[in-house]
Length: 355
Image 1: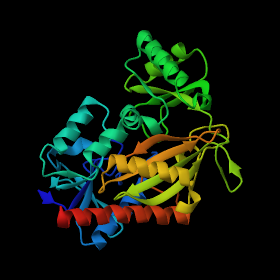
Image 2: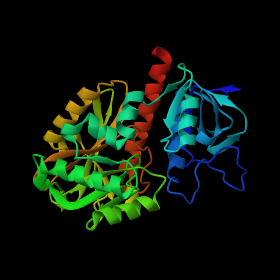
Image 3: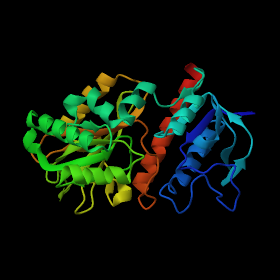
Image 4: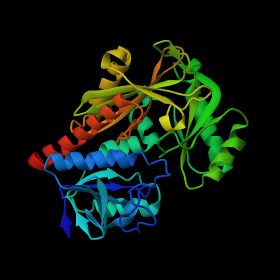
């Protein structure tokens, strides 16, 4: 069995190294939404090599025991190599995001031995992976949120009623439209987020029936299309702050495409890196309070904020493992993403030496 300094273990959105070349010659399909990650992980593995570390990439389907997978990819001399043999590491860069029973069991198996260390702190993962837990942990900073326990009509009506009660008692209730947001409780990337504007119980039920493998939360729709302006742009905008070792290391704005409220790049949003001075000081102040409350100094995570049209600030969600891909047409974005990758690898170097 091969022992590596670092093993990246990705979800089933990546491709196993055990597949034939006729299926894929890369760890992500070229025609998939994850295709950009090919160049990201090329750089990740190249940078590991430059730092004298051995590293590889495997997938959740290949997990066979604690810290071990049945096959793995490496990147050598500008080409991806399939290694169809077992591999093990005590340092795991975990990109799993399990939602099904099988995926949860695979993750538990991977970390079943305490000597195997995930990059993401367990408590940080718990807080940010589950959006309802995010709300329960940080309610004073967050948009009112209720869970929908099932797609049964009675549970949907209970959730709607509970949300209405929370909105009525909220100090900034005028920030919220009549419309509600139905959101995948464990989702990411702006996927499975629906704006429901009428016939709430019926339309929520339809969406949940069409996504019966997902669990959902319900939130009011915040009016935030005129709450923030940057260089003469006014529209639905979210503000992401990335923290490592309790320090703000990167920040960027994401602008939704006209007519949409979702700010994600792959949904048509525009991403612009900014300096910390460009970020409203009130947001940095709130973010520092959240960081102090979480108090995980060796962790890397992102906090996403919006500013309502009335000027109130809300934490939309946290991200325990910010994406490391980039828009290759923008040199600044590539440089910043590469710097983030370097910081991740440098954190691994510290952990290997001292922890």
